[in-house]
Image (cartoon, rainbow, N blue to C red; front, top):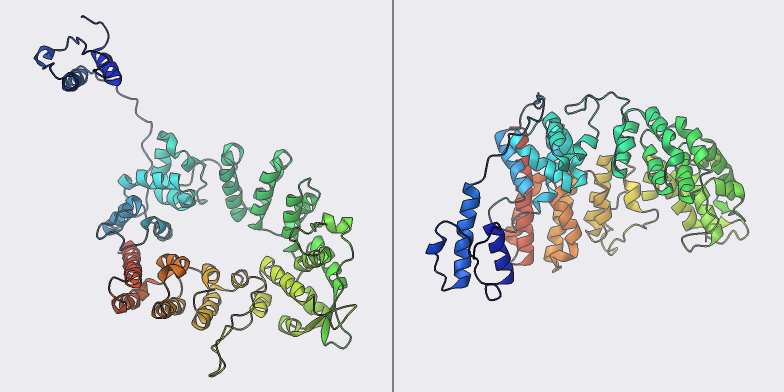
Length: 534
């Protein structure tokens, strides 16, 4: 039969229904008569091939698209060295070639490469910018470095492709390459962006102009949702000063208890704030030095009055602890740490060495852990290195010969958080000493608090501990968390030591493969960083 329908659509329908339910149509296609119809399925495919050629040959050219406007602005930064550009292409595709499994997940090394390239003020070849923006689109944590690296061409491309619109909402460094030309008072990301983009905009504005950031937040505060107010308030940590006190004091009356608690915590980090003074007064009433000066006496609050609640102390304990212990810990953690030396004349080390007793039963030491834990929280909150150092104690040392195995120090106050208060070099040295004595079993969080890449002494301590673990018969997966961290953080200079461990392990064993993979990753990292300086 003769049909007027498009032959391609007719064939498409026949293919969907099947030649056993619908006979081959008469398509009227050139050369269709030459098709052997003895096998309907084969004939259908041959007719489809004819129709496809006909459709392509008969396609008309579409009108030329309008040019996208002005060309991309020039990027004056020096271009990546050729080897570094090839390395970026490898990191973006995630394929390094060679033997599968001999390297770490390359996606985990991309952030390190981006940070290093950005610090050197280099620009990628134009051909790699689309892949870079695609990677940043998929992984929001890459966006600040990726957008800065892409520079003006990246922003120009984002104007042409809706998939990359996030680039236009990612604030650039003020005055840096790729910074938008909009005036400084243009806060479009704040007023029109997604929530995460608004938080980023506020955070970056606070870093360069705390007063402007506060005014921006103040302008929309009354209309924000409670959960949004909480995270916006948390962004005030950047550039926090006594100038923020009036706003935070007002937030103590917020209808959301979480907002009230966050405002109180921020105020407690400002030693000169009125809230800090109120907490210091309560703390002095709760802890005093005995007349003999030999111990501390604790009198926890008997109730959580309205004033304490307004200052961020919840009347009900959310932790399951007794209410008086909860109130006590909260007010001591919020009091300025300077309160205690000023009130007793004792250093943090001497205060921590004192026995702690109950004001009613001086022989009881039930409040010692509560007091120490609250002081630890205060040290972290107030970034007080002297108190953090005292609470941590000296770096672990091997036990004397014949004294047995050393015990790990008491974990009061989360050692990793206390370590984060110390300078990076001191932090790394303390962690290295801990690992040398106690191994890697309890070191994961401590290592996470250390600046990367790890210092050579810390890296050496980790490699030595891995060697001990391998020789003890432990399995690599029992240290999988630390091993994953070492691929990103171990100093590349330790590659030779790790290669020795790989060669010394039993052939084809799990440790041999683990050490070979780690050594290959360290070599890869060393090469990728060296290429940026070529």
